[in-house]
Length: 309
Image (cartoon, rainbow, N blue to C red; front, side, top):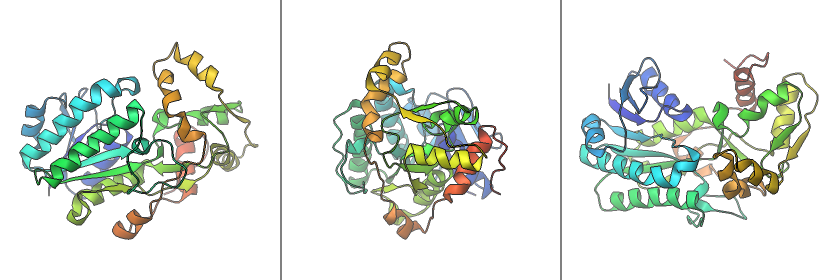
């Protein structure tokens, strides 16, 4: 049995912990609230406290960064939190495994590969890029083993998913308003596949020192995905429309999370495709079938659809 530390008890952090627990490992889940799976060792700690986190991480095979600061607090909260985890992993001799996203690439005109430069000029994109650049620099100095897995927008993440959060409206037969162009092709990552890839990357020393893309459940537009979900739930095709930029900015006056969305709306205004071929070839991980992903998301949203076994 090996010891692992997971910072964050959101959908990804919990899924990582559950994989580790299922194979008989010790999983310590660190949050400020003491949340996490019941079977895990839940630790109440501010992970930005590097000394305390390093003490907790002593003897661990890996430290997973699955934290998720409030969207409007990324620029303030991510730098000290990421630095603390890098310091803790380095001090404890644990592999640093970072759950990340595609923000660092910025607007693209081609499918994204892990070799694409991190060229984002937005605040959120730069903070995520700098987290990896700092970890990679430490890895190249042989101070720590580091690896990053980048997922696209999640399915299976409830309110944290652009897709899942509109399913209640779909089930109620309401018009659905989505970010960007409803017909732009988009890569989607299933939370369970992200977690499987993070654990595989932690276990495989030949994977360290570089980023990987999580398996892509499907490359479909928001309209296509929601139409498939409606059909699966026995409903007629939904009415789907994009939210105009001016409405998004107006709503942001009253909601701090919505206020952050114009910065990343480019991800839904044009094709936003992740190439996961290297991950599939290296780890042998295939994405969960799209139909199973949709079924699970619908079941979680309260539809009378049984999740796949």
